[in-house]
Length: 91
Image (cartoon, rainbow, N blue to C red; front, side):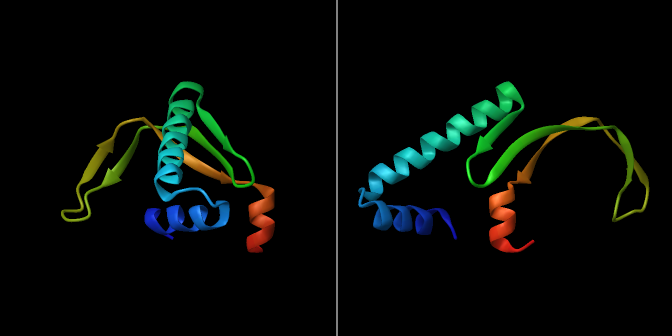
């Protein structure tokens, strides 16, 4: 499902105008992103949570030349699936 399909589906189910749904989803995305940046995690009720993790420095390999490449330590974002969604999918 892409963004326009999501907006259309939410608008149909909720009876709210597509323009309003689009604004709310964009705002929710901004709030969630800010929470991940500031607090290191954001809970998405019924779905799971986004958390930041620290990735240590490591030696990788350039796939074209095969030469070793140093990859610096950095932060990454990981999605942890909630039990409700996991059970619904059957995973």
